[in-house]
Amino acid sequence: MLTVTDAQLTAWLSPLLWPFLRVLAMFTAAPVLSMRSVPMRVKVALAFFIALAAQVSLPPAAAIPLDSPAALEAVVQNLLIGLALGFAARVVFAGIEYAGELIGLQMGLNFAAFFDPVSASQSTAVTRFFGSTAAWLFVVMNGHLLMTAAVIQSFQVFPVGAAPLEFLHTVQPQVWGAEVFRLGLWIALPIVTMLVFVQLMLGVISRVASQLSIFAIGFPITLSVGLLGILLTLPMMEAPFTMALERMLAQFQ
Image (cartoon, rainbow, N blue to C red; front, side, top):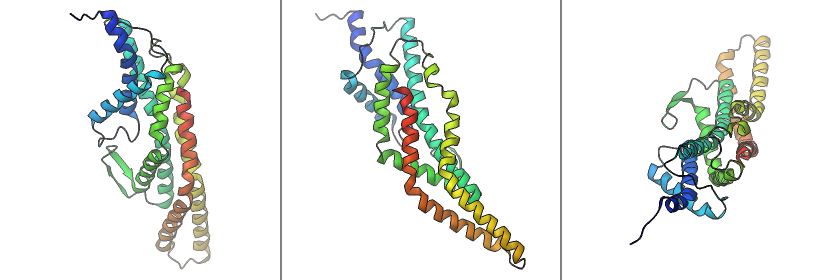
């Protein structure tokens, strides 16, 4: 008769359970992967296979009895680290959408707002366009592989068994808000500068030729210049997006 002791069961499950929880938490919060169109069964299956395939590269984990308070702390720790890693990638997407918000405000397109079923919030046309572009760029540049590598390497920096909130001293998520404004201004500043210059020229024209209806010709010109600026600067979005994503994920490696 085959008998299994608690120590053997813990030794078998511990190396697989903690990576599974951390990867699954990352999938729950990560951009693109956390979309409603991705079924929960797919997320669970991917998390299990990634945790299984990563066994050869993971450091040896301490055997924590599953019925002890230390097991609850380990569960909380891995869930928080996975959620924080997914949220770190979302900060980059928020910076891209903030750039779209600034550009749409200068173009006069912020009135074209609609309900976004993906984020369950109100968003403008330019913001939604930049968000969709960032999602495609995330997939094309293998951002999901970068996040998978980061969550596996996080076991070297934040091993299982430490205090649940100890990783916050290293990651410092309270300063991530600055990354949103830094990335958003980095991307939007060229187009915003161009649109401000156009508006200044329109103001000068309205003073010189007061018989012209500046409101009739101002919006088409501003809209055309804004679309032209987006067309010219969109191919250059990859560099700041990649640098920001790698900088955020480097905190977990």
